Length: 576
Image 1 (cartoon, helix red, strand yellow):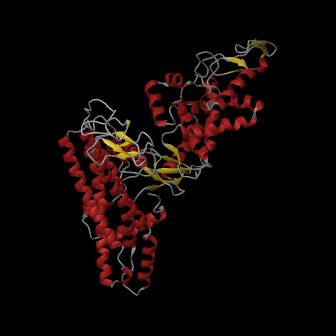
Image 2 (cartoon, helix red, strand yellow):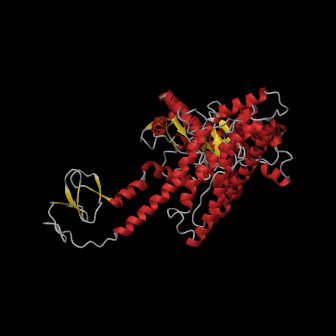
Image 3 (cartoon, helix red, strand yellow):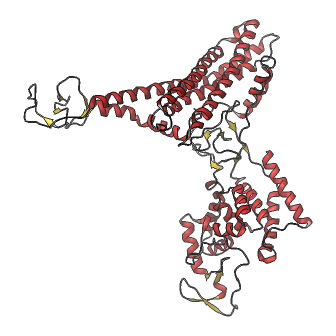
């Protein structure tokens, strides 16, 4: 559908519109106009990506008392889901969680190397090397620096920077990031930048709550939602999309429905199906030929004659009973019933497709009304009139945009909801008929009121008298309220009565928001986050060296101050 409003315009118009309808509706309607709580969405730019990742790292480091690279390993393993990581930590314990993620408990392995004057044999290259040219990981396995470096370079080039495992046989421990950087930088400094970039972008690539904006050309932003991944968002670049599947915003269609619908429209599969049933390819030029008579000997425009029953090329001589020098046996396939079924499927598809396209085109045409409405408002404001608030006109236009968009996507939804493609085993024929009638009644009411609102919006208000303008404003405001309530009821019907009653399938749709698709705001993190991270790094390094293996129940004043700093940083993110 494309972009049709900005966040600033939205906030301005609806603050005025809320005041415009005061006194027109009762308390129940007042409650209905309150928009539902939307999932908070933040824009992560190239500059704020590191801060966003550091925020989660700091939280895990402070909670579990681990070093930074161990915290990153844990978060990558649990796909940057801090809540899930904490739940596993509480339910199954630190040791189990570390073993599952490939993190070796620091202090459990003897890290003492031989004296500097001695040599050790590398189990990879089977050579004796000085102990100064050997590196040992947290898991205790020790190999020469040259073998480690080759191993790291191969893994980075293969795109496995996020989880480079130890070279030892059956060892699942993840290698220390600091060792990887130190050794690879001596051989290939540019590869270290690639390694760090992979680690940084893992916050987006492996995080189900953070995704790249799909805009073309790419704006370079990522978006993070706080509550529900099944939502529709708008990036700061203006691109609106479904966060779950990254296609255009398509509610009330589920992601699977929308994918099937776009493929069907693109491939014109129903038309191909009809051609398959009603035509047969000419054996000479291979063009589709339709039979328009009762005789089974047909002739293509290229001059080739062939048998309609088997498609084989024949001569032109034939009698009432057979074709000369041709026999294809008995023909038992019930082609007539098959053709009728294909025709019904095609007509059903065209019914929903035509209405979807009609409302999509209406949306495009109505989107051009923005400039016209602004001119009308300027003309009305220039008049010497006691009626000075014309926000109802702009609010009505944006209500028309949102409702028209939802109505257009409701037709692909109905096509799959009440068809045989997805839910054939979910409902009996009678149940499907009852639910279809219920949905179509709501859809028809919404469509009727949208057309009324569209008619009023296009009226030449700037030429009306004050009484006529007042009457028109009442009509537009009331229709806007009615349409908003009808949209809510339609979405409620879809979520509870239709999709909510499914037993064998799971389809989620983005919730309906009266104020439209949420515009993401740029992520802001307190400046104390990085300082807190450095403090945690120092503290956890000390704990990793044996001072403590579990989070301390009580801490020093510095510890309390660090935790307070973390809490303040978290509060900034949640409120922003």
